[in-house]
Image (tube, rainbow, N blue to C red):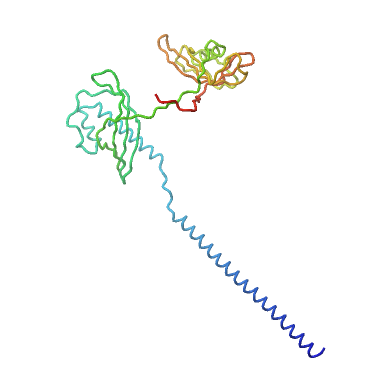
Length: 316
């Protein structure tokens, strides 16, 4: 080999080695950068996890309401208010010491008591509300009372507001009761049964026979009047000796003797249940019945759910 060829070969080899070294240095730099990025990411992830753990551990637990305690307190407030209003309405001078023990400020006590108080026929809680102010809770209890004034035998339904203060589990009336207006919006809906059914039709006859057996004590079984789906027995403790069907209404108009066999019909049956010839109660009884293939009707159930119309009726 000539000197020129040997020099050319040597220079070519040196160039190749330099290229390989540069490539190797570039790969190493990439590796170092990758390691750094991975390290930073790992530390960041670890810091985030630690921070979340601290937040979870240090976060205060939500206050759990003691439902039993709340219910018991509410009952105590209602009982106290009822007793206080009863003593205030029906009491006289002799009951002043009792009222004095029930109020938080004796200066609110009346200077003079009536000598002929009213009578109470009924009393119940109509509404209840409260506001919590630190260690004290102020309750507003609206009570409905049926009172009979001394000069009248006619009872009246009136409402009184009793304000009660609760502190350290003790209850006292903050003021004397006062009469208030109390009303609720009327419910202007009606049962969705608008089509009368003749009580002398085959359906009416079946309903009448069933009603007599079901509501009248000692009238036997229901086997002939009910379908296999019926769940129940005659009311054994019924005080009634008669049960007469006064009216039947159906959900949608039906032709009794042409109604499709097996298709259920929802009814409301008005029954006059009698204890004697002159003492009776009128009841509305939801029922479901169906027509059989031989033209008779069977009762499928005495229902609890009453169908109602979809739209509100105009208020009276």
